[in-house]
Length: 346
Image (cartoon, rainbow, N blue to C red; front, top):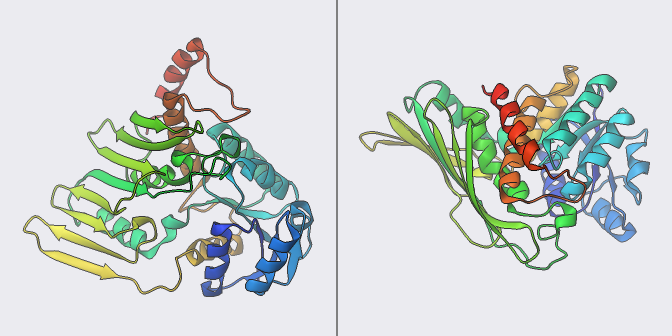
């Protein structure tokens, strides 16, 4: 099997974390990077010893030197870039959220299927060994019947109006950037929710800066989730069951340890000693899927990403937060929307 050659679009914080962890992947080579700024592209390629530096995204997308492309640009550009990659026949790992909304994602997955191109949302947390361990514990009934999940992703973001997180034009806000993680965790275990409630705070720049989301399922399971760009938090996650609970330690989305506690308060902790932040695991997954000739990952499928975006769409609709170019529903549409959704329950 030939070594898969990777290219990165974007040179921001997440691209740096990804490139830094790339040295820990089982296979694959980081061959190219693209930035619209020449100095950034050159500095990035020098820093991570990447052979090719492009000053134009499309030169990288069409390069014969690249097999797989990781998209690490602001959210608003994901759709166009992923579409260009698919049309160029390049496998795609696109940073989360995969697109701004479910409609965009659905269109891209149909395109990927037609063109037979592998595509995955870069939900790196899904492949973290701690999450794999927790999944195993829950599936084996270690904490009895899983009843509820509590999870947060809070931090204090830059307040600069032009920063991607605060900028509506760039798909800013807490929900899509950090709220997606707690929602992902809840849906990983419970599937798409039957009931969605939320309280949100919209900041001065018209994006959401803080929200608490309550998800419910018809069988009585609940998830209580929080996301913030304006406050600190331990960012632990708790999964509560009828015979005990699991705690994923601080910064649960990139944790290296977790514990299981039974009714009698007996505790078992597990630690994983992996290097870096853990971005290498999603790369391993993409490489594995490509070697097996799959178009999507069975562990974070197109359906999983669509279900995630559907919930985020519903929360944003409730907030009245729409990004440029999105259709804002009329009252009749909202009525219809609710009826339409009642068919999709798991």
